[in-house]
Image (cartoon, rainbow, N blue to C red):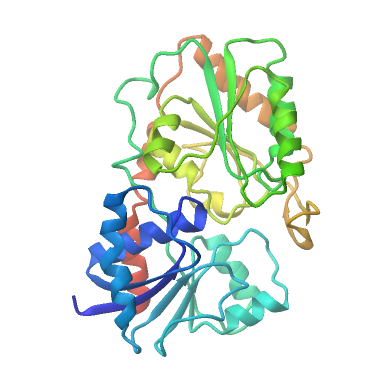
Length: 358
């Protein structure tokens, strides 16, 4: 290997950690000699995975001081880097405005990589003189593969909607349950599966979310899993992903569900626009934005999508999926599979390589 890179990234089963893990693997398989500097404590899903990364971790002890440094991390924390080579930041963010800290940190990067055109336009607007590139995140289709039948689902007497993502107002968790109950006030052949544990939330706030959703016996609260394989096993049973997010930096789970042939209901805003369209998703049209406020993580620093006025469309979309199911007309999301095939981690590495050597 004659191409070297110093990679700073978390390695775990949270959003940044999944991205960091797969980017490290993809760059290594693309031909890079990766010196891996883990942000936080690494969390490997198996001994086999730990062994895979061991050489990258050892290489960090003798890193090339002049090699480029890629940091996959928050846009407000770009100060620490490795070596004196070209420095590339790769953040994921949800809002359309940056405060002075974010502008200062991103201005320190020689180049900035983002995952979507939406994010690229925001950085170019907010960070004067920035060199911004796009590298999509990927899907491992060896893990997230579709069931080979007409519906893409195992036989089931119940239709299952699914949402995955940390408990947050940003994720639309404040409206999912009431709209589900409005759409299906008495139906017993429909369920809502929520995989939303948030390790960063206070116990009090976590209990409030759990208490609310536990009030409906048709809701299944699923604990966070340790591996992507376990996540895929859960996803294989569901029929439709439900993602009325106010803003997303990417949202790994939608392309993963698409890869498995699952149907998608999602907001037509932020990073969703990079892979959701009218052929592969039921889009929630966004008419306006509003100050991003949840009084926990967001305090009005920027704006996100307003879900006011979208309720009827979300309910109608859920009912449409349900009617297809009960009338025997439910089919696999073939367009979603086609879309997912366009998003591989190998392609992520290719796009990063083009930034480094293009």
